[in-house]
Length: 487
Length: 49
Ligand SMILES: Cc1cc2nc3c(=O)[nH]c(=O)nc-3n(C[C@H](O)[C@H](O)[C@H](O)COP(=O)(O)OP(=O)(O)OC[C@H]3O[C@@H](n4cnc5c(N)ncnc54)[C@H](O)[C@@H]3O)c2cc1C
Image 1 (cartoon, rainbow over the protein chains, first blue to last red):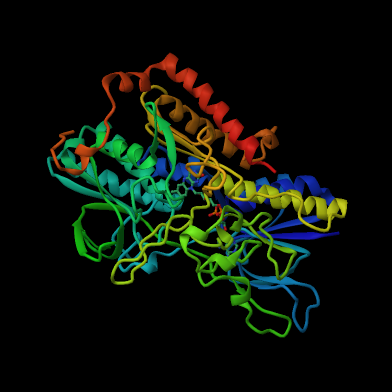
Image 2 (tube, rainbow over the protein chains, first blue to last red; image 1 turned 180 degrees about the vertical axis):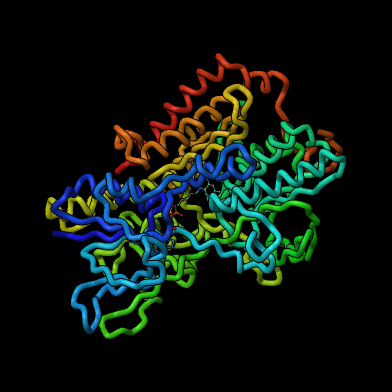
């Protein structure tokens, strides 16, 4: 019997676990270690953040789904990986600490034959003083709880606007090295829509603040699309969207401090600036979740397995990290998500260490890096989870000696639909796709395939987004025919 | 929306009335819905290895 342990039951880990359990059957064991009792379809948190959906509509309990799918569930967080075992334990293992299942605080060792690290991001609000909903002055939509809190705060603001007060709203990235601009972009879009619905749009000034060099960079070095008879930069598309909605923007910004009602930020030109707000949603930078690693003798080998940001090394070409932007290559990106020191270890989704940025690195004259970090959005994250599951199926059942399925970000695409409004005929949306995610200028004139890269605004995207919400929750709950729904 | 010369928003394209109409025209959007789904399916098929 082989045991596969998956750390993290989010988008990528849940995909890997559910497929593996189905393919491996009862002779083998799939264990998920994840601190959350509920699964969250994170993209729909945006709607929760404007009161368009309740928290309950975007989450479900994991225990019954894992019981149905034949997955062993440990509601716990992983603390350390011991890829050589220890003096007392011959087999490789992880240590975990329970966060539920009536064992909160208890520790346990779980041995494994194969390990998948799918622990996603640590929401690093601490990187910017005063950032975040817990100890800071801004709200967040990164978890369902945060989004629900953001919605309450937005309702309070709307009530004040209805009584005639004018308000300033600031949405964007809360640090110079954030990723996930798409979420901030979509939230801006939704807040604008909500204020219009409530009849108070004229009482609000909305400003978008971003670490992008130009709007539409999204951490993927922007994209070109065909639009109105031209091949044009996504910058034009993004700026047009904001202009149409009367949203101002501040770009190339590193937010370095948040006070009550005031954001301090540095621009790429080195200037220090301030922006006032009454309501602000700023995305935090992401880090790894801080797993430690130890060798057989108990020596700390964390830096051998994880990069300084806490993301796990895999089969990427890390030698290009310090090389100039012009020398980067689409081939630098990992194919199999496999750690090269311990080949029975994999990292998928946000948990793997990218070889370098995708956007061009930039620094202000003060030495402050101001550039988006690489996004690993839902579609590639789930694809990586499935590819690793397919490889492990072949290794465990068919005696393959190497991984058999790849999910290289330079060979896979991503789709993003930013949609606002709930009514079938009253919503609006921006639907975007790109192929491939990592631009490849050797292969494509504009870095990407223009047939697979497009952006379009209209009701159709809104229907697509609603369809995706129901389809992905259906799939994650393992309802009939779930395997037919693509990642 | 007020466009002021030399301000940020005076350098961006804005949709014409016809473009706005098309975005909400249900029969046209139904066709686009099918088109977007086909594009996304092709993207998914190209992405699986
Ligand atoms: C507001 C928002 C909107 C978004 N919208 C979109 C969108 O429209 N389209 C899109 O493609 N992507 C979107 N994304 C991105 C998408 O949500 C992520 O790309 C995706 O969730 C990444 O998957 P993951 O498995 O790597 O991480 P996650 O889904 O975050 O899962 C990580 C899991 O690991 C668990 N974990 C954490 N620490 C530990 C530990 N120590 N031990 C064990 N488990 C641990 C967590 O509890 C979590 O369950 C959005 C993100 C945000 C924040």
